[in-house]
Amino acid sequence: MSIDPDKCNKATLFRALEENAAIVSACNLQQIADFSNIHPTSLVFAGGGSKGKLWSQILADVSGLPVNIPVVKEATALGCAIAAGVGAGIFSSMAETGERLVRWERTHTPDPEKHELYQDSRDKWQAVYQDQLGLVDHGLTTSLWKAPGL
Image (cartoon, rainbow, N blue to C red):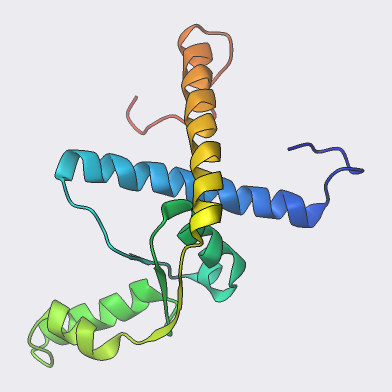
């Protein structure tokens, strides 16, 4: 990746940001699976980013999992409405009501060839990330993020 305007433009830079977010998400999902022994068979991608098709497909290709896009993109608001309905006695349970109310707009299926390419990028990303952490540990650079309370 280059930020040379002769080699990339806004579209390639934006795609790179989406790919990075998908790689980080896939790494985090793998860490959760490693310590919980729970392995998802699909993902739900909601919110504003799910309105377009590119990021959803990138997430499917990077993770190797089908990505489901709900009709109602603001899943937090829908979840709050379901919780309020359960609390008020209108619905019997969160899970049952979610099954009844959540509808799917589309599903993105991973492309096995792209998944393989992204696996290589993910391995490189993890190596570079470890190197970056080492630079921070040695005081050669600073971290862009610090956990609250540290």
